[in-house]
Image (cartoon, rainbow, N blue to C red):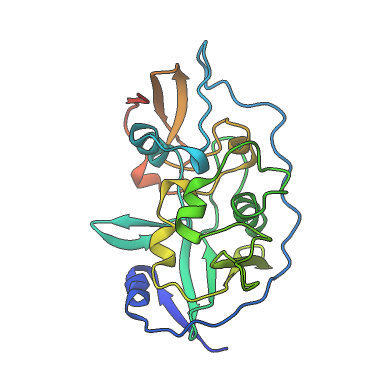
Length: 244
């Protein structure tokens, strides 16, 4: 299938695609990274556990956006690259190829690669995934209609998402069951940021310009992350983010 190469701010071209619904096929994924043994304490007496995939409060979601990043983001109401530098979309709108940004380090020392991205998609999609935890993943259902193995009354998959596969260490191919011109925009939701394994158990699994510092149930101190991939965007000082 010929791919249309969408570079940087060309993501908006997808929104104008007029597509006919058609089926997809599941693709194998690499083994998911094991979750961290214990959640990070974030330096406070009362650790704040944040699971971006299961947070609903607007203040918490705002805090997540400082600490974590997704594959793509919104800047001035337009889609822009984040952890994926380039996205390619197949002519039928059923395959999205994400070319990942090299040299990204997470706050816990993990590095961005295809296996880690697939582990996040598997956690959101598969109720049996070992990194799943006890969350309900309501944002996933709202955006993509269902989980792995769920079918409609006529036997078709409920979910628009069909699976992800590793092309190479820095390339991920995502399959959809039906075309969705809003797919990339949906991925900008804070629920779909990419987390290192530390985030699967409530620790700081982010790669953003801020990392979690001291925290309690009402607030978290955000500290500049010197290892952020965009050196020009490293904050000069920290700030306090309310959680309630």
